Image 1 (tube, chains in turn green, brown):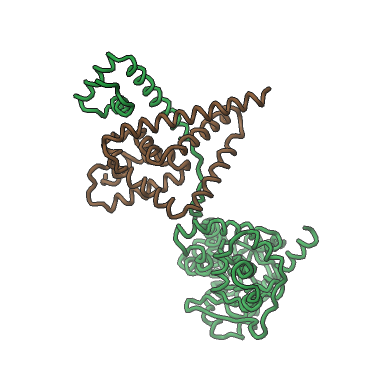
Image 2 (cartoon, one colour):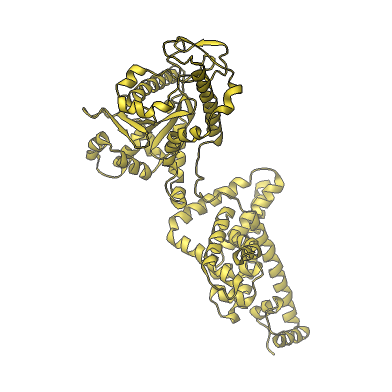
Length: 372
Length: 172
């Protein structure tokens, strides 16, 4: 018998030969010193390669940029919103029951909220969550794969959202019971009567009373409490901010990040188109452009470009869906970005909220300038 | 227990280990393994389960790589950086990380078919299963494996030697 080839030796050592073949090999190896050495070497290769491959088992995780996890609002936000609403609603029920909720009555007695809380129907909580749910929806579109490929852009958008100049960060409420609620301006609401009627059942003009005990004057509540930012859902191409108007009542401000559009125009199509496209900046195009936005660098450089002035006549628009969610759109005079403010409010209220938000953002921007 | 559950429990660990060794990333390996079991769900009958699973997983990796060569290059770069980054902390970890990096280099240096056959064998597939999964003739599996093992060990030892020389030069 001629000497064994390496493949046969490995097959034999791996137990892959038939009984008959194995017996032949075994008999030869006993006789042949050269093949004994080859078998010994093969054993060494088998053991060593196993050992080498074992070293691969501590492979790092996350080398591959996998799909970004769906970002949802912190469940805690829901819980806080729901519990605050329950308490507030309970307060209203009790106030109405006692007949002290009259508008002409300047003072109302705020009850012990803990006592009345269970009286509030939980169904109302669900219906009032709608605006927030709507705010969340831009995040939920798109399959896993798409999210994965957009992972980098997404994280860049997140990084940008955390830039100080872009964050509208009102100072925390200074007044006790500060997150209590806004003063409803009935005169303004009357300007849009149908909408006001639709939304009427959700209205309440009461503080949670968490910190306010005893007698408090409703009209004495500070009108210009800063709106509290309760969430910043992440979305591609726009910066979303959730403001709490009243407990359980939030509005969402969506700022479309125009510079991503510009960056695409600059790197993609001709520069001559830049002005017209950016000035028109229709919403779907801005979104598509944001998805295509190639690198963080171009976004950064685009951000420093001067804002495009708002086109005349396209200042403010208002739309409302059948479920009562209204959206106010305008172009921010400072940045030139398209802003959308949505919530279950009348146009007048949204405009009032817009005014307050813009003031808060301006104040935040000033604060950043003074103290960078 | 459903059939897929049984398949998963029986083969997932081996499949993930095989894919991890093949890809160098555990997350990716788990993703491909899951996709493999999803494919298995759609099958009415599978003759040789293990060979089928390893073949499908291998093809998934191959298809993905073919689809996106650029991504793979980028990932290889990231993986390299990751390996280098891993070699930072205390000495035992450094030692292990260097071994892993050399092992990866040695495995990557193998021909694709040799590499896959070897990795499958390490997961306990017998010669007929390897032949089925890789569409080889059963008689050539021994030769493939012997070549793969020899080359793996030799290139690993060469890497080890050059590292020792580097360290010696650095010390002197």
